[in-house]
Length: 255
Image (cartoon, rainbow, N blue to C red; front, side, top):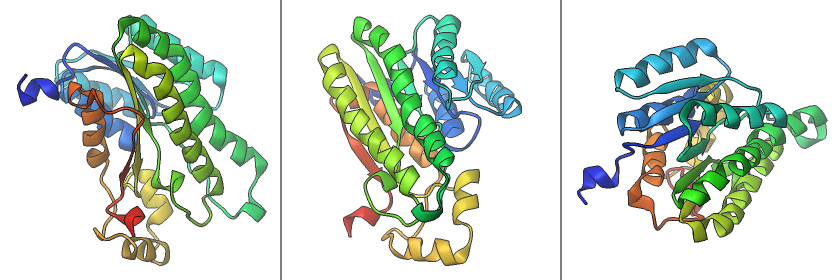
């Protein structure tokens, strides 16, 4: 098999959550370019429409799906809608996430609960809904977009870090059940990525500069760099990779 086929998603359908912005948009675009049809979940209908034009320009099918992932019922409906639109989902990318930061002593319980609902419970609900079909076909990929904060300590990120650490644990647990059915489940843990959310949280020099100083590579990430790793994990090239929690953070966690 040539390298093009090893990294091809031709004939596959992917559900990408959080696809109306940031990393999710980049993943949907890269997957479409690699041959996948895209079910794109997001909150911004205008951005989803623009993404749809890009995907369809690649000759791929596209469906826009909205729904509040903080609500398990709406999350189940997102999975069900994707199956109605495409019949089956071969690749699930749990990219949607929120970062409500602040010190624990001042942190609002409602923000904690919403963070857990979107960042951890929603990937569980979507995986639960779509994994049976993958297992029955003995083919499928689940990719969880986690964070380096799920592995390292970072001030004012208790809720976010806890949700991402839980997502890493969910990744490994799902793998043990999915692997015997030839389904791969992996997580990507990026550094700060220069999405709209990343820029809003890390643009202030007093916060940005110390973080970059701790990173041997000396910079933050770009959304397409995360999308390229997701493409690897979605493609046949990674069929032996399972239960991995992959750090993409310029060496921060290695020192």
